[in-house]
Length: 267
Ligand code: DGL
Image 1 (cartoon, protein in one colour):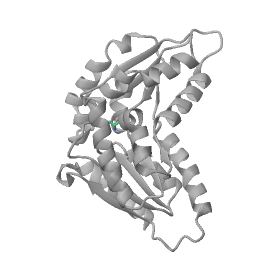
Image 2 (image 1 turned 135 degrees about the vertical axis):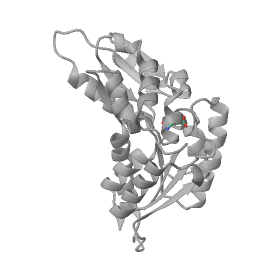
Image 3 (image 1 turned 180 degrees about the vertical axis):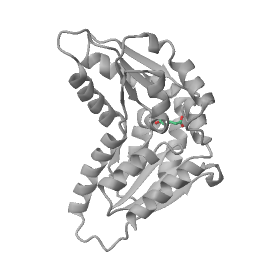
Image 4 (image 1 turned 120 degrees about the horizontal axis):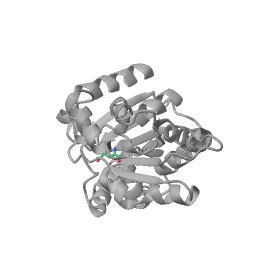
């Protein structure tokens, strides 16, 4: 199977690295739109336009399966992408993230005790949509659901700053009001945020932090297996990852190191 994985930048590497572990015998094409990252502050219409362009490119690569490893794009452009790709199956972040967070939240509630809040951390585009908030409020009507946009996080990550006092201060400032709430569950509803999970955990002591990267990869694996089952012969496609960045010079060193580690997993 040939699997296309897309993100605005390097957030999707967190999903890809899980997927490479789950489905090592596949041909991957990772496309990161590093020329246009961040998407999260853009209006929905722009996110759709950029997504269509990028998925047209992935379609040209002849992919059998598309993984939208970006929450902002999954929320605002899934239909545009599906239209672009025709019958090629598409996996987004929202369904896997909602089911994982729902399960973990249900499992972490102590009987007889008041429930802590359910917090969604994401880009402005994700939070503005209210998609996650609506889903959780419908499922847990008695739970306090909080939604927080964190527009400074992605630039730090794309610039290669995964730790240090400046990042910690930005994270703390963004989450300081939430840190006053009783502890609860925080969903990382932006694929970039897994890169700075430690900083987020420090700003929200005691909170259960949920990263849906693996859940999305598991959903993709199910489809990859189905596709492989329906392909008469595999044709001896080598396991490999083709890396495409719209501005390769912007990819930070830590991401290059992660890419190299994935490459060597498939060798
Ligand atoms: N990684 C993307 C997400 O999951 C957003 C990053 C960006 O703002 O471009 O929402």
